[in-house]
Structures are given as C-alpha cells and as structure tokens.
Picture 1 (cartoon, helix red, strand yellow):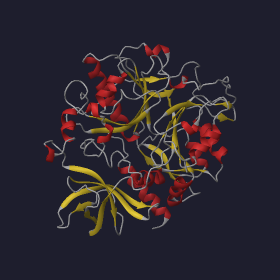
Picture 2: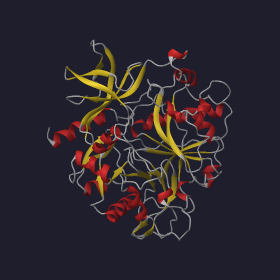
Picture 3: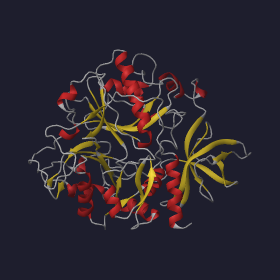
Picture 4: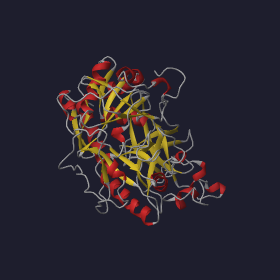
Length: 497
C-alpha cells in the first residue's frame, strides 16, 4: 500500500474512536486555574521578562491563585469552549506543524499531525526507538485537583492508591462509574511538589481529549456527590491561563534524557540521572529570551521508551518545542505524529480509550488490576469505597477460587498473515466466537503483526492458540505477553539507550 494511502487509512482509523463522547447533560461546576506570582501574559511577548535566577525551580505556574483557594466547594464557572468537528481546536504548536508541512487530520476534534514528510511512519517509529522524537499532545486535557478533600475525592473516583503517592510521584489511574465500575476514562495522576495552597493537596490529572466533555460532566457530578455527602472541600480546574490551555509535549526515546539535560536552564538544579520513571519535577529550560517559566515535567510516556511529558505555559509552548528541536539537532530529535504514536503505544501494550477501554469494561477485565493496591482490595471499612468497588473487588478473585471472576480479559496477540484490525472476530479451533480485536497493526520493531483483543476468560493464558478472521480468512493468532517490545523506562542502572 502506498504511503499516502496508509496515512489516510490510519487517520480514519484513529478518528473513529477519537470523536468526543457527548455527556448526558452539561454542567457548570469547574473553575479554571490561572497563574499568580507573577501574573503571566496569555500571548508571547516580543521581549518577555527574564525570570530572576534561582537555585530551585519555582512551581508558581502550576499553583492555584490565592483567591481561588478560598472558593467554596460549589463554586461554578462557565464551561470552557469545547472543540467540535465543525470547529476543531488547534494546539499551541499548530504553526510549527504547518512550517514542517505536517499531514494534519481531525483527531478528538483537534487538527493534529499524523505524520511529517521528513520521515515515513515506519521510519518515525524506528527513530523514536533508537534516538528521540517530540510529540505534540496538547490536545489532552490537564486538570488541577486541590483542596483539603482532594486526596479523598480522588480515592473515591479511582481505585489507585492516591494516599501512597509522595510529592512528585504519579501513576496510571482510571475514572470509574459508580455501580458497575465501568471505565469512564484512563488518566495520569500526580501529587505535585510544593502542594500549592496546602502542602500535598495539589494533584495534576491528565485525561484523554476524546473524553473531554464526558469527563467534565463526570467530574462535576462526582464533586457534587462528594460535597453533598460531607466530603471536605475540593476544587477541580482546567489548567489554562487567560482561556488558553497549557501545552503538553512528549519527548520520547533513548536520547530524551541527554536532550532534556542539555536544555535545562543553568539556574535549574535538577539531576536527570537520579530522576526516575513515574516522578515529576518542576524545571526551567534555557530559551532564547532567557530562563523559561516553570514547567512540570513527568518522566514517562506512551511509547515504552524513556522520556518526559512537559506541561508548559501557553505563552511559551512554541518556544520550548523550538528550543528542544534546535538544541538537539535533527540528527538526534525529530517531530513525530499520531501514526508513530499509535504503533509505538501498541508495541508497549498500552491502551487507547475508545478502542481498548470503554464504559462496558472494568479494570479487572482490562488487565489493569495492578493499579489497585492491596489495602483497597476489600469491601470492609473505608479502603474499598471507590466507585464500582462492589462489582470490581469480587472480580479480583477467580471463579475457581470462589470469587466472581470475569468473563473476558484483555490479551496481546501475534497474528500470522495479514494484520488484524479493530473489530476483527477472534475464534477458537471449532470456529466459535471467543473475542474481538480492539487494536492491531504491523509492528515496525518486530516485523510481525500484533494486536490487542478481549477473549473469553480461560483463553487468556500465554501461548494459547486462537484464530482471527481477517477479510473472511482465518489467521493463526497466539496469545502473547505484553508489552510486545520490552519497555525501557529509566529506573536507574545502565544509562538510558
């Protein structure tokens, strides 16, 4: 298949499940975070002021302002303008994409780059695995959750161990419906350093763009329920300034650490070598105009490689991206789009909401039980009081051991012959339907066809042989351990890469 046809097919596939999911009703309960100390401009200035040197990075741009910290829990604000397919959003890096002649496609009601002419999709994928790529993920939704009740509120809506998170620590979470425990969305939650108004009570949550409106309604309703049942004050705010969302950049690949280290401002005292996976820090970078505003940088990402996700003030998102690209040079760092991002995340065994996760699925069925700590795996006392606990906790014990178990499980597959795409039926040797493929593509790294699927419980064991119907033909598929490609997160030891 030609390169242009491949890009078009990939774009259509991505858009099918990236369309915003409409909420049941519109709510007006979220406030928005603006910055203070100092007050920041919403547009880049020709000669922005250079921050004074400092010995420790300043978290001011990720702190709620003083007046907002005292808002009552029911404080309301007009909802932000939601992008739509008819009026798509553009990230702060849109001019950069245009200047690099990116192929732009509609994704989650944003105009996003799927590829760049400098590298084909397979070449961009391989570049990320061997060097480093810069992805624009500014379409994602960033929130601050703060207040005395923030920790308890988050432990209500997600089963992860929020209490265990130290300052600067974060991890994967899922937002759950009460009752059946369906997955509203998956997200990343971090307890920020400094904590803002009350130490340790400021959390940073990143959610999917395609669930933007649905998540907004969900969080509003959950805040109302929390406060209505006596929960301590909590505020949920979109992270923006002057109505413009913060940028989000993903620097990914084995050279990401050295590239970021070289880009740090001389005043920034951060040791990249002792900065491990799952940790977030406040950093500043050296820009042409001087030291950048504080950036919240989280070590991790969506590719399985070492890397960082940088939350950047909207006035400097473009400048930060250009500084990273210019500083590293095109022999080490290239821009990458949605095409490479999708194949990289599938090789890493990571889910894409709307494909591999939805509200009909629980964390146990999705093979995400590992995010539920031991202390929360009980219905006794208050530890298990998260949404859907009554349905989810019994699923943790298999039917063979007296529990409720599950009827389906998410697995990885290696498929022979043609690649199996989303919606392909999985069958057993007798031809009986046993599951459905949710994501699939040729793996540029392995040279094999890989897929993610849900299959009947009992058929999820590694090495189980099944078949997938591809264009009406049965193709052999073997259940395989995920990730398909070993992850290379920086956890200490040998130098990354």
